[in-house]
Length: 449
Ligand code: CA
Ligand code: CA
Image (tube, rainbow, N blue to C red; front, side, top):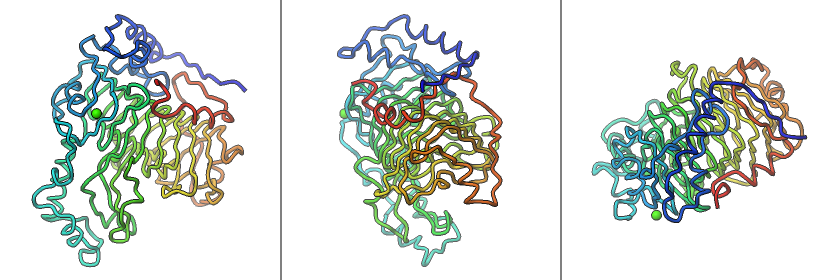
């Protein structure tokens, strides 16, 4: 069986073609030591999916010679993004930023990593926090409040000001070679347009000041702030060929406090608050709990008509939940590989979370799950009413995701009428080839070596 290409004629596709021509001319001078082929890759616009619509996504393709930067430290990254992390979101000058080696986002301008002690508010103390909000005395009825919670929040803000890196419009951030790493922080794409991030291993967006919430779920939860990449109130974003992990601090090394594991991580790539026209392709998410939140709140009715996201050829390996969890968005997931080994702390929870007014189209995805995980548990219900899958494989057999889910949940009414179809060109690889293709091609370091 050959690849199946679904071709559409659209203004968006024409616009992408035009941007492609612009991107190829005029050619900028090469930074020293950077191959022309690498620069060509760094100038590519988004190839398919929602990011190609409504004008397309070209990132920093139109960068002039002096706006192509090679960076190998947090300070250089912030400088290349405009100079001041607090205001860099407002810098919309087209730029290509090439990441060389490892950047630790906790490091100061002299390259020395800052620690919890550096970020902590003088009034904050972990032991005192745990004593103050112990459910045995504080109860489970309300979220922590008072001086210690306020001191925790101030500490968290201090960390965020340093480790959450704000990215302005018209930027491409591209990892050089096979070993570009960005760790201990967040790429924040917030309130901007036209951003591309490729070929980088993102590790460990570790929140040094997690918050207890006794009202979260039946048993309470420890929650953390930071995604590896956050896309918020932004449009036209392409996130391609990256790797996302918890680095040296996987969740299972943390203690349980109040009977719950202290969680220091949030999303891998979360896409929220009115964001739109996003493609997430050929990434490898490995050993992570909450992978993609698309839509942050049931009450955000302004998200209606937004949160259009395509996820394709991603390798989700021991990615417990939110693959993705969707509210409001029209989300297209095709040719992804979902694997859980069963012998991991990152046990399978669910793949697709059907949130309020979500409309997920799943096509030719592959699910490799332990024998203990039934097919019905590929879906999880959060007030959604529609879901459609075509041509997927569950443990080597034709998948019947919705049928299995409905049999396990006979009281739920879920229809296959998702009410939309992708308006862009895309090529579906034959489902029996997806596992090998995605294992071989997804993640950082496979695009440019
Ligand atoms: Ca470095
Ligand atoms: Ca998040």
